[in-house]
Image (cartoon, rainbow, N blue to C red; front, top):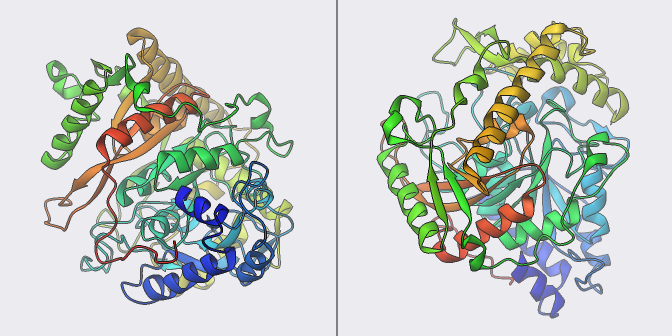
Length: 519
């Protein structure tokens, strides 16, 4: 994205030419060629918007002037684009007003190119729904391994989810950058699988107003980019207080997330590696890595040490609490294509209870051009259109709909308190305090849950390529590494990630996809 901003600022390309080039590339690779299916719908006004920006160059006041950006299709826009969360039940549904993140992007001059595909309802509809699948949008493909599927037609190397399309589109060069969302892993997982940088911010750094929710305790939006500096640029635009989202009232943000990015940031930094070879049974994050993954993480640690980091190896002592007493409930798996059909599956209590509460509020306050007004309505629509809408069932929605929908239940309050106790007080806080850490280093998205439940930030950066899934041979695909830390430590984490990124230079483009010729 930085090179695109430079080209726009230098007059080497116009916003219209750039937008046209991306639209042509989407036609060639998303709708044709490997048919990545990462873009659910294009903004019919994209070229008109770009045309109005042709005379405006990126500046301090409008840093994204003319930059085409995709947003995940659970983020409301008040234009001609529907906001569907990938659901057939919400096909054609629009929003009364813009999500705050979209308003901020437009204010900064961005061209909203369209809506990115996603795992339906951010992967909270059905047990074992494949990453990147939705009843409305179909299946997103990983651009590194687009053609390898199992006997059910499900990708063997998935694109990561739930922000699947947001990640694939950036990796494949179909937009300058994108915005995804995460409740637990939905930014980190697709960023890892597609060789991207992402920031899963502290809950409250970026407004969630106008985003179809899962769980307000953990939901957040975040940027997906090809470099750490680009992620920092977008964070500068997106991090703002918003009266529509009370979580932003306690926000603490850096004045400039791009400031002081340099290789010297790692010198003297204490980086926790939650892996203790003397306690292998509790080595939950590193102990089950594939040989390729273990090799890459060993190389990452070598680079960090070379940069001057102090590596502290010690297991996270309470990792097992994250799915422990009072935080999960059993849901019967009726997914007709699941290999675990007929067995009870654990689901987070907080997600199920907050899902009904938040989704009903969104449908009431934001959704227009739809007869769907409640979660119960969606369930009924899906049941009436089961052949098209319920390929993988809707067991999680059925379980969530049994809650009162007002968050008054004791089990919900207890589960949320236990999540905070385990992930924050006895988890990240205890671990970082005991070892005086600046950040915790996790392979891929393996640390997503503990940081997400705590509401703490994570920054991911590519660290190389691996191969193989569940014992099956595959072509190479990316793996990322996560730097996680305390609340509001995004700037520190970005600086650490930048130092590693510059020293390692491990981001790779998908094979067979030429670079965008317009820049």
